[in-house]
Length: 125
Image (cartoon, rainbow, N blue to C red; front, side, top):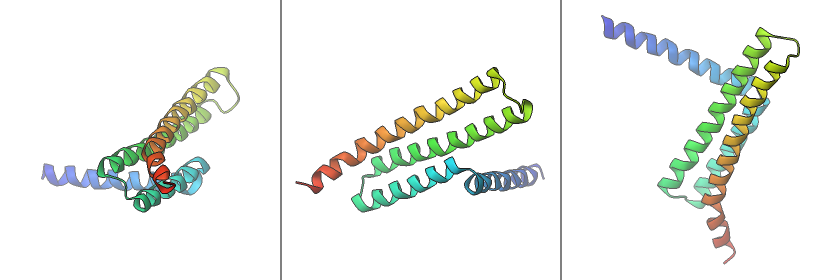
């Protein structure tokens, strides 16, 4: 019976996770932009027939940026809930969270450039 309860708990947890992802996609402009970029990059992967290893790096980069955007959104919501009016420490926390997203976005961009620049160069040769 314990296994059944464990699996049921995971099933319920997965439902909450899917609901959270849907809420992010529906309500957060930053996630919407990242989702469009993810779709474009996935299409580019098929178009250029990137290698399995390149797919792995691309998927990890997309997952990291989307996940961190979600965490940043959660941190901002918690900070606003705890202290709705402006506070320098809350501002610092929100800036640090946004900075983490920025670092990940730069990293994902570099990964994309490393993957796609050789394919683009090959188009012109």
